Image (cartoon, rainbow, N blue to C red; front, side):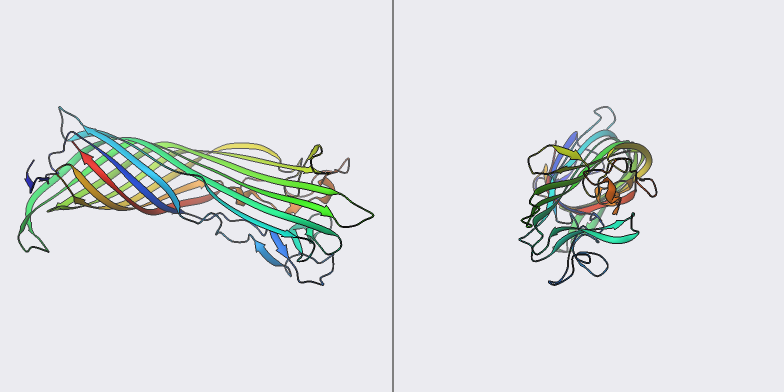
Length: 375
C-alpha cells in the first residue's frame, strides 16, 4: 500500500481486516390507526357524544405514530482472505432501543372523552364514553412501542479497481485517486416487534349506579425476515477523502405473527373477563401466524476522511424498505358487536365479515456517524 503523510490511501490492495462502529439516527414509517379517541363540545347529547363524523379526533386517523428519531448502533467486522486478497467476509449488526409513544387524557366528566366505533348491531356510527358530565369520569391511555434489529453475513469479492492521480480541490496539487467495485452475496435477518395498547379507567358518577371499570385492548405484531442478499459496493478515494455507495437487495420469507387480546374488569382489581372494546372473543382475539414472500432493498452512501493510517471518520446515509409485513395499527377494526362486550350476552356471535390480517410496507432511513479501523 502507498500512503501520504502516514495515512493509508490504497484501496485496490485490501488490508487484512476492518471493524466499524456507527451511531444511527434513523426515522421509520409512521404507524397508521383509525380514530381511537374523540371528544365533543360541552352540551353535546349523550347519544351523539364522541360519535364520528361530527366528533373531534384527539388521537389516530393518521400515520404519524412512532415517527420520532430512533437511536441505535451499527457494527461491522470483516476480514480479507490471507491467500486471496480480493475475497473476504463481513458480518453486520444494527439495532435500536425500544421506541415508545403515549397518549394520556383524564377528565372528571367535562371535557367529554370517547372511543368511536361502528356498531354492526344498529348499522350506525357509535362511541363508548370514557368521560361525560354527571355520568362518567375516566382516563384513557394509548401506548405504542416499536423495536427494530437486523443482522447479516456476507461474502465480498473485488470485481475491478483503478489507480490514478487527481488534483486536490483545496491544495491544487496532485493527489492519489483510486476506485473499486465489489460484489457481495450473503444472508440477512431482520425483525420488527411492535405493540399498541388502549386502556380505559372509568368511574361511574351516578349515585344510584356506582361502579368502576378497567378495559384494555392489546394488539402486538412480530415480523421476522430471513433471506438471501445480493449487492454491489463502489469505493472511491481522492487524497484523504473517500466515498462509498452500496446497493443491496434481500429476497426471502417474512414470518408474521399477530396477537390480539382484550380484558374487562368490573370492579377494578376484580376478575378479568375476556374482551375489551375493539378486541372481542370470537371475532379477533387470539394469535395468528403466516409466512409471506418479502423483499428488502437497501441504498446507502458514506463520506469518509482518513484521520490516521488505520483510522477513518465516516458520515453516511441509509435507506431500507421492507415489503409485506404487519403493524398493530392496521389490525384495528372499529366494527364492534356490542352484544360481545362483557358481560357477553349468551348465544351471540359476531355479525359481519371475518377478521383478516392486513399487510403493509415499511421503510426506515437516516444518518450515521462513526469510525472505521483497519489492520
